[in-house]
Image (cartoon, rainbow, N blue to C red; front, side, top):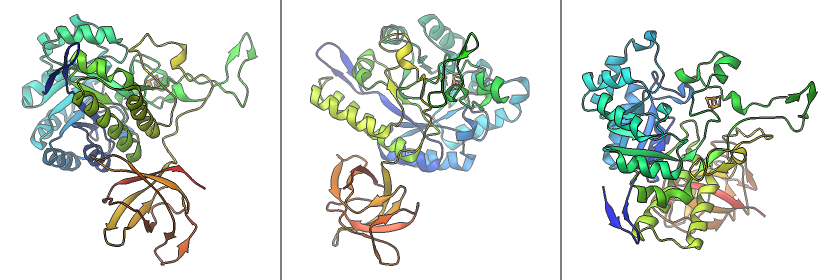
Length: 415
Ligand code: SF4
């Protein structure tokens, strides 16, 4: 791992670890700068509704990652009951054969099995183990031989520093994405409300539903102002420098159920921020920080807080009165399919309504964003149209700089 001496301390360049719900999103995460991607297979993983990877997909993801200098981690993070072990040994062997770098698990039984049957797999303890102190980290290393300790999202920055400094193996910390109002999944709300086991991959996010709030028989909520107890998302961009100086080896983005657009913009935002901090030995001006915050926020469509890094979760981290579980960001207009350098005409696959006059920004892996206005849109019948409003239809328009297939276009404003 690269190390630099900053004004006050050694600064390390951490791994940027991104989520992926399917192969397309894994490739997008890698294209936009993820050093590693974590994903779930068809079984043994939480977020079972987001786990679309067959073993063939996992092999393809490993191959794509390896050819781009990236790595694949696989979540095997159910809390297993006796009946859940069937097929697990073979599954772990298959992951090792596929070229997976690490499994992420919260079960000491799975850790022991993986070390025995698939010794080339690194074992990373899941955040679900709620590691909030050095003793717990050391026990996992001594007794279960974990290769990386994923810190609890409930750690504050001082705890991250202390645990990381004492930890003989790498630590990993969350920097962005959904939070649980309960301690990272130690929750049976979903089980009780829907009979779906949150710890075996079935969380229905019942904390984010709308509820009627009663007190002494009187209703405090109204139809327009229902009650929810979901947490705001974490957005820890302000703490990246501290995490780097603390020596945290991996910075993790949450969100295996999030869209391709979300993955691209959040990964790209943190990629640029981490690189700039590293290149400048941790120094960054207020203006540059504001720029990075604005870039990261463009991909986020829920309310955010800084998690627990500054202080324990409190009132400011809860969404009390707003149902906010949307996964669609309507600023995402489409993806580039092809580009003709001579005519500067791009063919674009539509995702949300594109209108003549839209002021658009192109998000391009490894490059700074560029902006342009859409002057004229042509559909597949070669007709000039004012609006392209059919998802996945192909349209063409001029982009005055070079773009490449899979580059993402998002709206800044329209006429
Ligand atoms: S219901 Fe909410 S608090 Fe409970 S596990 Fe699911 S996301 Fe976390």
